[in-house]
Image 1 (cartoon, rainbow, N blue to C red):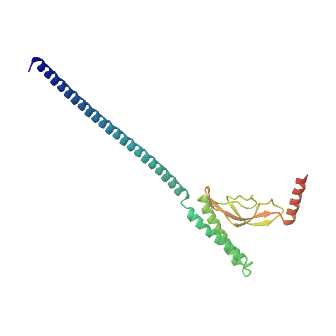
Image 2 (image 1 turned 30 degrees about the vertical axis):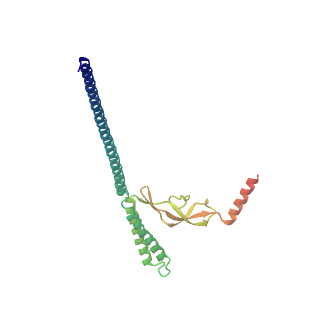
Length: 213
């Protein structure tokens, strides 16, 4: 082999070795990039997991706070109105006393007797004691007679002709109503006034005349 051929051969070998080294460098760089991308992907995944965990913790704490507030409210209501159901049942005692009193007063065989007088006195004492106990526990009777009908506290059961009262005025109390603090225990059952048919016709006639004018 001549000197020139040997030189060309060495040059080709060097070029081949260089190409091999370049390919190796490119492969190594590619692997580094892949590893870097994988690390970045893992880091991003960890960040997402941390954010999800923080979100779950925040939601859990918010729910715990809501439950605490609900519990406090229920506890306060239980303390304030714990006797609501019992008080409502106890009203039956007052109703029964009223009914018993009316039955005795309407019994012809007992009228004007000492027994009736003493019995009614005892019933009044019991009724006053019950009202006093209710009052101490913030249970109060609703004022009804001669009041304008208030649908929040009164329930109209009938209409009664009464030209001396404004229409809708309570003129009869059928059953007493009560409140416990600021809550309605039961509405009062009442009868309300209305104009008599004669006066109502005059009233409507006057209204028609006024409209024509």
